[in-house]
Length: 248
Image 1 (cartoon, helix red, strand yellow):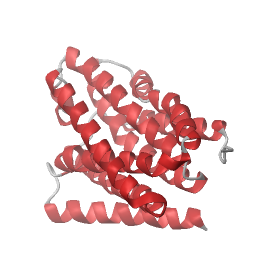
Image 2 (cartoon, helix red, strand yellow):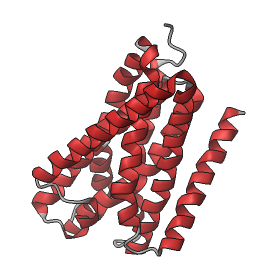
Image 3 (cartoon, helix red, strand yellow):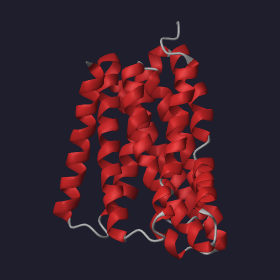
Image 4 (tube, one colour):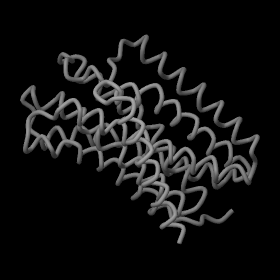
């Protein structure tokens, strides 16, 4: 099968998602503290974006093989749950506990986010296997999701004396697996095209789990259920509209 998207395009797209993590540190250059409500709002927006991305992956894969998509979603769910249990046994702190983390946990959480970035890099590569339009949409969704992750890392480092620019560097470092994993993931799905629906389902299943297990609980800490639901729906609508614009 010939590659419909250049490897350079896939690499640059995944690199953009990594750089977006560093953007999250920028607010701390102007204010050393970001209110908890804003963090919850960011988590709610990220949840809506990831749900829209998951919807797009499923919709793209179903015409090629609905049962394969379902199988992939099941595999993605199993993998992300196993990874989450492994992190719990390793004593990794929850993202919501970042502000109270000590020095050991500070570096541990950077490592944890680095591990999570492998899955995001695979998601970018897999999505470009479905074409440049889908790849662009998923890239934007993951990039927007990475901004609050970078802010979370900066909120740990900056209060402990780390300069903002260094905190941004560490945030980007935690996302470097994204451009590193995107290329092999893209090559795999293009070489094994019949299994592309499985890859779409795998990425969608993992992202949906992340939304309900991590993002929504964080968002619900300082947002009422009504406000949380409204933000998630609006974020979903915005990304769906963006996808329609790209399709044109």
